[in-house]
Length: 398
Image (cartoon, rainbow, N blue to C red):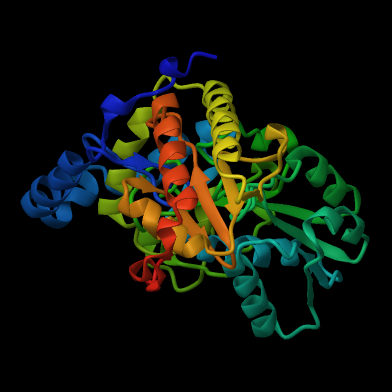
């Protein structure tokens, strides 16, 4: 695989003298986004005012963006709705799944899931107050926890700390064989590796767009619903934008006859316009090529860091087929080391209790970046530069 055939650095506004290995948390700024935002704000909102809902096609923007995301996650047009936040989409998917499996009282996730997903499920179950139970076995034990009592299985495809990856097709088969509905959180998958939502048959999938899809901080989330079950989905949050005819202003809710029924409030037009523009960097890109480049970069990174810094312990799966597009190393003073590294122009991030996390986004990361990063890590760890007391001051965002 020739990484240069995937790298599109010229399409991004990248700061000079920075190696950015945190696209798994917040993607870089694509060129053209600032101009699109200005056009939306000044030309459409400012110039057309409320007329822009029609004259600038604001009303159809959520569907258009959803279809662009659908291509990147292996889903058909019309099956992905955009808007709201990932937390809201998790709530909607789990609530819909429970209604589709009456009589079953168990939701299975895993102990490594992103905390928000578990918070949202627990909040939903407390609201329902109907005897539901959330089980969170260790990730490797999830399959054994799925039986005929389970209504829904909610898993994050790629673990946010280590990059460990569930087998999507196998786990979906296991859940459905037991009669449970499957829900995938694609926060660390969409835009990082090939996905086949249609092929695996999952009932639901949710995801964010500010990581590998480069939609910017707070970019709208998305939700996928398998087309053949849409009519059976009863939205727990019945917002007017999910109504079949929002401007009929009917007193009773009548859901749209598509995944659009899972839209809730007024779409965030400025953020959707930014995301729409950001998705242009994917034109002509195949996720299989991105995945191959990601593996090559991450394998080089692991080899270089382990050779230079034996003090660090690989926390990610060694087999590249078992991890997503990130590499994590465990180090007792990982927070301080990461701050020292960022201070020297290599940006990754830290996850408690001891994880130094590095993301590989081949659209703007290449082999030279990996080698520079490995060299800086060697300086920080080998020279114990992390001991400087200023690096121990904890910021709100790590």
